[in-house]
Image 1 (spheres, rainbow, N blue to C red):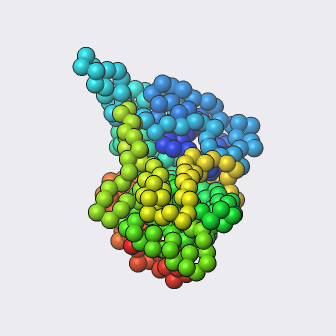
Image 2: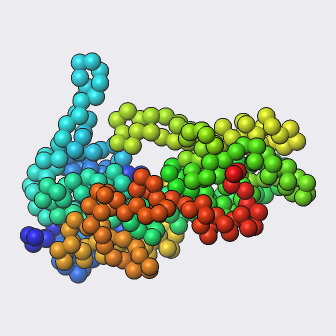
Image 3: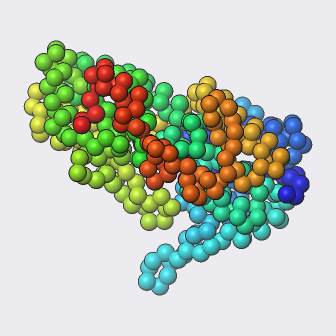
Length: 376
């Protein structure tokens, strides 16, 4: 491995709280501990291709720990190994592998190694760049907490706090009007946000991708609460929840995105179905959507992001390129990128490489023990 004198950083995929803490940890460790220069490429992988970057020093990252989002901006549409370069005569998009041009830009700038912060798609490209000889270290990112290779990811805790706070507020208006309130949260393949947020926010029904629901079971739960004198119900639903024998609700398809299928709106579907079945209550729908991604970063996510950043630099400087930092048992360790996005570290509770909620696990069973319904 060649000497590392300058490190590049990119933040890819959807934004979340804690990204700036990672950038802070990377930059300060590189400068203070190793005397290495740092540059940040803007808007994800597109910054590598377009040579769009900013120099990062101690002043540039001062005071960013608490801020949500990323000072480097982000993008979830740019796969440089299959990059849209225009349209063909028939109107379809033409794609091209432009990864070599990105590597030329890195060499021109004197960047010797790249730290990539992102989820599945972003880290897959990180692996592919490492296969081409570029020293790369990955940092896992997703607020869905569905990456099997790490116990938890930054951004997840902040999102849970947002969900819990929203449910606390919705609880008072649900009680005041005897309403059924349906609250949709993120979670395409895994229901961790709905499950843990719903538990903390005193939800009565939690619907997650791992447990297909029966709308009649939800109605039954509402009637049970009415009979008990609790004339309101709070339902938390993951965007990836689906009815028994049915499919997920696709909101739209984005043609030029690497993750083209966008879910969302299942909460609205459930709301309309319930309103037809229940005449004694008004049913109202709220989608927390991008509110879950933003805001002041929680203490846990600041600390975890910072630790990821520090250890990513240590890994790079010690010859650990080709790996991703991970959080295991309250320690930061590492795992080869090939195992994360190659064969996959799938485990018993994951599907298609996703870490999913175990329907027989402690969280679900605890929820059922206190009377929460999963619509099953």
